[in-house]
Length: 54
Image (cartoon, rainbow, N blue to C red; front, side, top):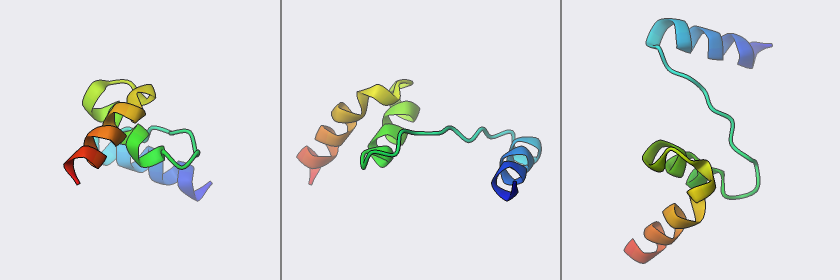
């Protein structure tokens, strides 16, 4: 319930939306791909680009 209240409040106050990602060890890359490419399923591309950079 607390988490839901947080989501509602952040939407109301800041206009932001909390988006759920699959919890499979790639959630960071899924979140990046969702924001950059508009598709969380492109997480492997985001991951590879990070690895190539490092």
